Length: 118
Image 1 (cartoon, rainbow, N blue to C red):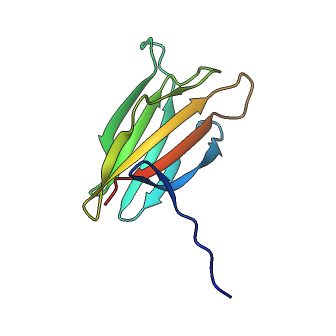
Image 2 (image 1 turned 90 degrees about the vertical axis):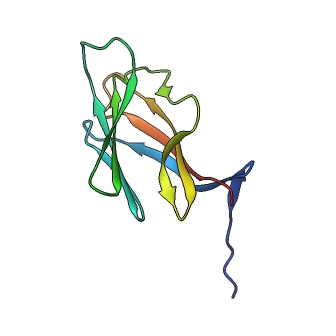
Image 3 (image 1 turned 60 degrees about the vertical axis):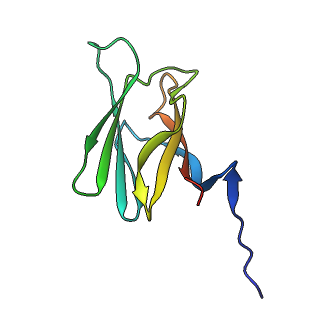
């Protein structure tokens, strides 16, 4: 029996993963896309008015993304593709949206990972 493989593309971008994760009590979400490791943290900061994304290196092959004040019930996210790194000379991008519902155990993180076309 042959194996069926489904590949997804948006224009020239290859969709390598997409989904939703409900974070628990704002614990970090970690993605491993070898050789990269990306950690997503949710931060609430009353000294900052707007939602922001703050990035920091995480070891030699990692990235820490701090999503600050993503508390909107209608959603917060990036406007364009967010470049995360390179894998085999191809750029890796993330598109995401965070939805926060009052009283929920955590925030809902909707994501799609893209690779630049070959």
